Image (tube, rainbow, N blue to C red; front, side, top):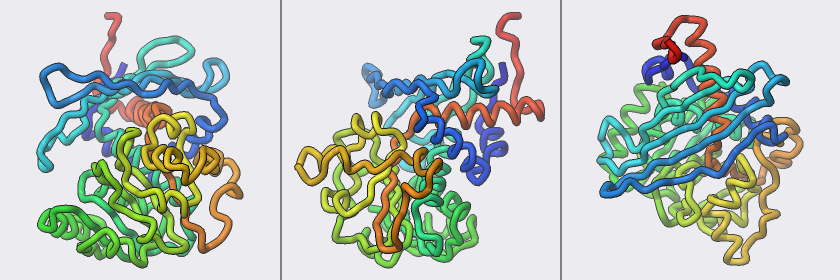
Length: 332
């Protein structure tokens, strides 16, 4: 088994290299060559934290060389914005499906951040207009920063606007992002200002109530909904959901945890049929995606274990080839 730390995950799997990995993984999800139990949460007694468990399998043993199974374990703790640990600390345990032996323990927070932004990049590549150039980032945390190079991986981004609740923090974010990614990043005074004229909008907030509204949206935009991952929270309102052509990563997960969609269904604004396709279905058949330049498309990202397994497997293969990380013999 190989242990792969954070620094090696970042080096071995940059977001642009992860996009095709996510494409293959999401196609596998949509053809149901996976096992994906809905994620479980366990509160940590006496602490403002919880343990998230995401088991799953990808591929079929004996039929695919890369068939694997495993689990992602993530500790989610409330921490200050600038805490170096972030809000998610964990690991992915990867096993070989044919032999049932452990292959790797891969650091989980960077892996999750990379695969999440890469999945958004895949959806953007499939759903956004080909001439998309202006990006709006709603939020100013880690995923906000990650989504800028992710969008650059699939579109020629010429301008970025970013909004966050703390104007001083947003100004720092904009300066750092401009320097890192070589693109003008401008603070916006409101979500509506950030969204105005944007071709791509990525919501990456911890908001419990909508921050982006249907009235803020314009024809032709593509939206990646990333921040909310539980059924009781939402980053957009009912009208925004209604106006969008709605795509998800995994139908079962969306119907269990996509707060924006579930609230709109409960309000009678849309039905379950508002989900037009999974992104893996669009990857396999692009005709299912955008059909005109004035549509508003949306990808609701919840994250599934298959994405973690695929990303971890890619990291493990490269680490094995290079001798990166630390190899240990559990049976010695």
